[in-house]
Amino acid sequence: MPLSDIACKRAKPKDKPYRLSDGDGLYLRVQTNGSKLWQLRYLYLDKENILSFGQYPLVSLLGARGKRDEAKKLLIAGIDPAARRKQEKITAITEARGACAA
Image (cartoon, rainbow, N blue to C red; front, side, top):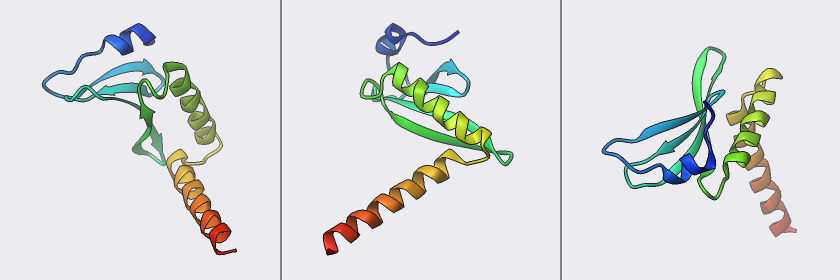
């Protein structure tokens, strides 16, 4: 059963970190200190990977679902979403350094 925003808000920390599943690999990881992080568990080339989307409530339930859908589209196209994110970060840093030097 998919998560609701109320369930996300009411999630309390426990002795060990735990997950609240939303389905399709997306879950909310609740840490022992009470922080909550959206993560996506996926397979790429038969290897399990985890992609983080940000902290709840900074990233809403709807926002996390949108990011999950974008990542799934990349996977269908044969692209690893984590590798794509790293490449975009490197490109942004390189462009920023180039703009500073000019």
